[in-house]
Length: 182
Image (cartoon, rainbow, N blue to C red):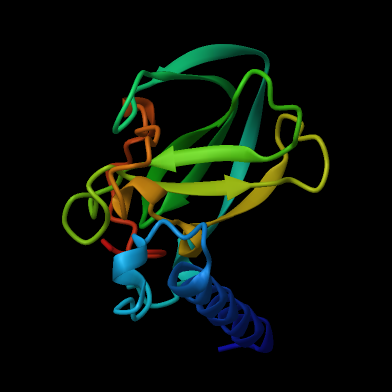
């Protein structure tokens, strides 16, 4: 393991510890209050450097609207603002990134399902968020780190309504990285 890999792994473990503490103690934790005392932390796949992939961006200058069903409520409307093409486990893959129409931040929402969904990971799919350090342009290469994939709050409590990944973001490979089923 190179020095950079060791630093990355340590940072990932520190992020996980911080998230576990938030879930166990914070008033806005998705873990129901009566269950927080017994909460022992989230279950994660082991850090996997192979699940940090270089992806080529295609930016959609005129983003198409995409309506996403939710776990508990009406559909939510997003705009498909970019597409990321990458290789994972020797398979060519593509994921779309979204933003809500009224969101002027650079944060991209990347919900997805994969071959672990409903087995090792949450049945409703998982999310990644990605904030490029500048405006993306066609052909830009970015790192997508599936080790940061997380279960939405609705995986912990039915009081939350969460968007479900649209079929266009269903991967045909197993992504054994990030959070497992809560």
